[in-house]
Length: 330
Ligand SMILES: NC(=O)c1ccc[n+]([C@@H]2O[C@H](COP(=O)([O-])OP(=O)(O)OC[C@H]3O[C@@H](n4cnc5c(N)ncnc54)[C@H](O)[C@@H]3O)[C@@H](O)[C@H]2O)c1
Image (cartoon, rainbow, N blue to C red):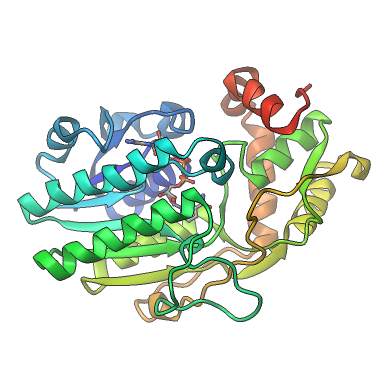
């Protein structure tokens, strides 16, 4: 396929680009604004094999340039950090909603298939059981609300214009190349550096962990074999409390357990997410990486790739971290 991958310089997008090049032999154009979370370094080993367009999805001219010659669009581009959406929602409205609209228009004009990458957070929190694609959408943060708005807009383009759209909703991803503001890389890098390990609330929030390559395969299945107009959940094989994730990282890095520090909970923090992925499994997808194995691989990757994260921890991230957690990194 000739794919336009929007947000392909981010964590999941870059993994997807690598997967589609290596396993499917696609021709790929990446359109990415290169925000703090998007980095050419995430594509360092494949930059020669793709076309890279530096631009924003909310900019119709940049989209028109990037989409030239493509058969399908996959949209990863988003503002993605819940904490940042609480302190500054504006960028989330522009990228997640307006940007999705610009992409949909460009794909519609050209009659292209369109896959929207979405999240389990659109369903909100669930005490027990799992959400199916028929569950009501009940987002609770500006991040998840703007992702939900985008999903509804995508569905409307199927219903109104008959456009070939699919949506793939992933649970919490982890793996190499994830920006260290998110739980797992944050804890790994702090553990390695001997920094405190800030755990929100009582640490009992439960997440359904999905190795990022497994999400890439799930998105591929929805893109290639999904029925137009449908959404597909893509949940990880294992659930785990945040505190247990941190304890496991301590074991894998040999850090001091006394580094754990319970900090004031995030406002509106969802307690538990859980997805039923039966519909995606019916397309032949299944997760290949269990949490224990994936976490070990991920810790190993961060230990071996300080060239990737040292510039982040030495740059603007320090200021963000200090503002957010009220203490400086080492
Ligand atoms: N990380 C998770 O656990 C998770 C789980 C489920 C779904 N998702 C979804 O997957 C997608 C990718 O998430 P991620 O974790 O890789 O995020 P990320 O923050 O690592 O990457 C986002 C990418 O989008 C780019 N971007 C941001 N605004 C842009 C704009 N206006 N125009 C063009 N590019 C822009 C950034 O530069 C970056 O490369 C998002 O849509 C997110 O909602 C993430």
